[in-house]
Structures are given as structure tokens and as C-alpha cells.
Length: 358
Image (cartoon, rainbow, N blue to C red; front, side, top):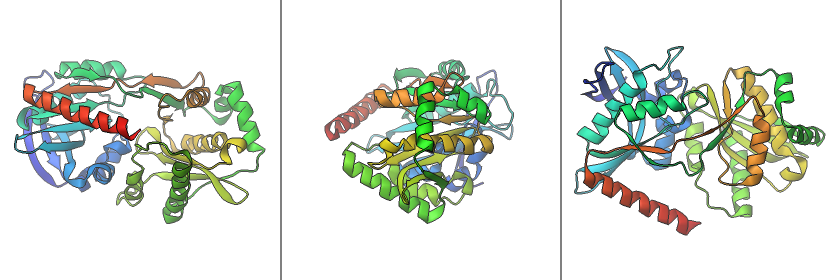
């Protein structure tokens, strides 16, 4: 592991002293799959492709020689002011093997606060990816580490399919309308398969770009990072691409990230034939079967961006056995009023730019 620097933090906490150790992006990506809560937005290759390699800062938090957790932050230096912004999205990671998180999450968060908000004088934002069983732990740990809730998530709901069910139980768990549409999709003659390598990437991107041209929506999905993810040196990081074809041509596709126990629906694309063929039903059902065999615990379908039809689709797929959880949004730590004011200004300008694009 390439070590860049380390700093002591959290010495006053009952759980003991922790060390923030800055490591290279390559070293972090080599160990990220060892965390049960790993997701692609916590890989260096994704963040470098989306935000620029110079803005990515990877770290572990250690105590007594043991790694408690780690992650990647996207950082922005504010020129001439010796201050900046750091954002840890969907992290930090803290679940390893069968180890219960216990008090370690608060120790990790306090170490990050002392390093980024304290030593670096940054406005630090943590946006946790909570699940069905750890929302309270995150809230308690963030507040214990000195973070304050800043703003809610813009698209908070996450729809989680329970992958512990066997195929018969999973099908019975579907809402009746979803099951009806799945039967129609199964009768439509769709061919569904996982497509690897350059073939999968090229076919999916062609489908995605055609969808963008047809629908003309403001795309903030981070799709530009997909080629880098598919070419990641560490095989565990590379997503899986599934395509549904009709009459020999692709009509729907999905990119699935499977690093930890939470498989993620990263990107999706359809053409004009997919709706009539109910291709999305057959595609997701096939993916659920593949993920069930992989040992993943949850299939995260993502959010809806306020789309009522998408909400119904995902809610009916999740069924009674799954879970719909609301992400808590942004928590912040800032040891300077100036850093806080600058951060609010930067985020406000970014929000205005997004509204103007829409």
C-alpha cells in the first residue's frame, strides 16, 4: 500500500485514537472490494473519471495497526484562501467481513473531521448511503463526531429488492400488476444476456446515446465514467452490463455495480420498442436472478427523480419483502465561518447552473 501521509485524530474519544492515512488511488481501489458497504461512487477510478484525478483524495482510518474504514473524498481547493471543500459521498466505508460496526463509525467520522475540517481547513460534507438497518447508527455517529445536518437529499428514496428470497418466493413477492407485466414480457420473445468487455460497453453506450437524443433530458448521471469503470485494473470494480434484445437488436440495457452486499443499478437505457415489449420487467427479473446467485444482499434500484410512473414500477418490484429507505442527505463539519460561507456560495452557484441547464 502506497502511503502518502498520516495524521492522528479522535484521541479524545472513548473508543481510542485513530489515524487518517492518505494512500494512492491505486492502493485504495485494490482494497475497496473488501468492504461489505463498498459502492462504485467510493472508488478512485469512478471519482477520477467524473471529477478529475487531481481532486480525488483516498484514505484509510486506522487504529492500533488495524484498518477501521476508508474511502475517497472529492476535494476542491479555493485559490488564495488556503481553504477548500471536501465531499465524501456514499461513505466512508466501515463494514468489513463479519465485523459489526459498533462504535467504530463515530471514530472514523471524527478522524475525518479532524483531518479535513481541522488540519486542512475544508468544509467537509458527508453524504451517507444508509440502508434498512443502519440509518439510526449513521445519525448517532455523525452527531457524536461533531457533524450537523445541512440539507436533505434531493431524491431521497431508494428502492431495495431483498435478494435473500428464493426465485419462487421472489416472484410471489411481486405486486400483482408487476407480475402481470412480467408475464407479458416473457411472451414477447426477448433475449436477455450479460455482455462483457468492449462489445457490452459499445452496445450499451449506443443505446444510451440514442435515448438521450430521443428524450432530450438533462443528464447528470455520471455516465461519462463508465468506460473508466469497465477498464478498471481491479476486476471486482468492473460493472456488469445486461442487454435485452428484440428481433436481433438491443432494446433495453442495464449497468449493474456489484462490489459489496448492495448491488447497484448504475445506468439504464431503452429504445422506442422497450415500453410495448415490457422489456424493463424481463431485464430486471433476469438481473435479480443473477444477483441472487452472486450472494449480494440487496439490489438497489436507485431513485425516481419525482417520476410517479417510475415510483410505481420500483415499489411494485420491491414488494413487501423489500425496503424503501430515505437517504438522510448531507452532513457537514466546518471549523471556520469563512469556509462555511464559501462552501454555501459554491454549492449555490452549482445549483443555479443545474437549474439553468434544465
